Length: 167
Image (cartoon, rainbow, N blue to C red; front, side):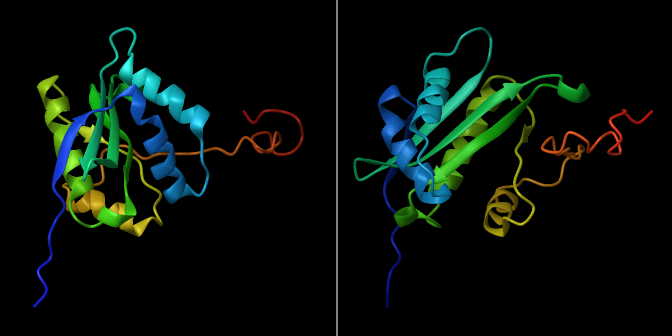
């Protein structure tokens, strides 16, 4: 009989020294390393300016970064009450499906609640079944808003191709 063991995981605040690990984890999932992007993002979370609420967390297992989550609070877009947004979550493949992402998400939720936030939102590609399943398993459901999109790659898309805006 095989006994499944979960890795010992500790959760801590995101730090400036975590950039390389996040670049690596993101590249494992997206296939594209983006060091400049992640340096900017991590800096915004580690050195926030203004009143913006940021929650940046890292999961460590066996002394290495095993995952991360980034969340912030946004208020009043489209008539919405202030709410938390889960912007990014990533986990090392060697610890996937072992609860690391759920631990990160739960701790992000606790920290958002401590700041008075009562709702958390995120966006997931509709065909990303594993990610949809993850969020649904962790209590997320369809919300009151529908995300709409307009392609801006075709300058004539909105004007019927005649160079004049539709009225």
